[in-house]
Length: 282
Length: 272
Image 1: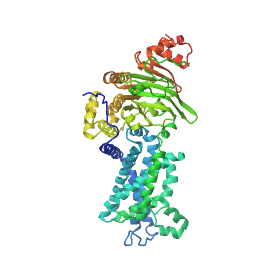
Image 2: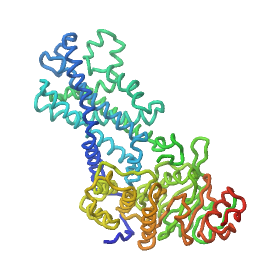
Image 3: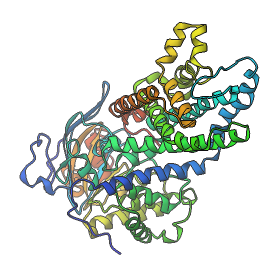
Image 4: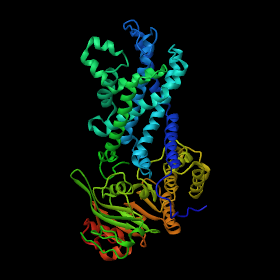
């Protein structure tokens, strides 16, 4: 029962220790998620409002022709479901990344960052943990949507999982990159106005791109180059057991670029230095 | 400002090249400077903490203590100077350096909604300690701080003193050889303060851990302690408390501090 000082430890860490660290971080994020019921409910209400109200209202206005991956005429609700799934991840990614950079979670980030594992690994684990939470939220949404007659093939619930992990990572890394790099976007309202809304509306989440092209060729290209469009399409195809290779390549490439950028840009002093340098936090 | 000679163990400014025996130092800070934009928070700070010693870092609020802690824990990048923990440079080998170190930050960093045990297990995972070993270590540290029966309680339900003791226990989970504490008794009542101080002193005395204890409270320091006086980002004095008092020609640490910092020019003025 003593804490005798251990003198010699082998340098570096084993793979098992890396995994222990990853599981620990995801486990904690899961526990916190379970304890924050309000966060869970608000994350669910947002897409459900779109599904129950917006989609129902627009059902008559927007006709959807048969486009892949769909093999038949579909209701508008069915069309926007993948977009709403990606929206859940977009909000979750921005929210959790913002709190990693700014002070809300600073105390917890400190305990994370004094871990002896490499910083890029710790931040990746943290992004994965945030993604895991967003995936849970998406499945909860899909469950409710099922009762609203959004019924993708059963295999789709499985095939969509890797797509959700990848898109969740991309959006989380993007959030971290943005909140590390742009000073003015330190509150969530700023991120909503300048990141979430433009990304969401200038994408294929709410309307197929061929309809956008009819209305405005310019906007069509904006949508086409929006990584969020590809996250939506990746999820949409995967939900029907299909693969959209272009979207996979774009999302995987963007994930890599955003993650590397976020690791390089992440500077824990930013959350602290703004309130008084010498640890003015209380 | 007077620069006092350090009698035994401490590095002097300019001592960047590590002499052969420096690997023995638990913590060695050499010529570290840090600026926030134009404001200089630390100016060529050098100090050392030996194993099995209790070193107090004494300074007023804003002296640069927390900045120094952020640098030692790799939270901030080092702008100038070097920091070594048991010979491991924090910039070059952060993993090995951080492994030797336990930290208690000034703000509370526990998850209030998680249980005592969950907080400890999370920290163990961050150190790469597997579940089984972590459970054993958690039981061990909890019984040491007398919280063994509270391991299922939410941290939110603990008292301030218990939370601090838990944070110290957490910092010891991976058996570090250097323990850093940034004003750990702020906001605690007298009894909790004494308990924590005694506990940490015993860690240094009985287990050979090097302790750096940042504080602005003079009554937490006893004459046999090592002490580093930090004021406006500069080290004004370091060495044994008794020596610093004697060198300043003061009657106690409080008046020696006032004299060193130039708040009261004549040390005799404050003496009772």
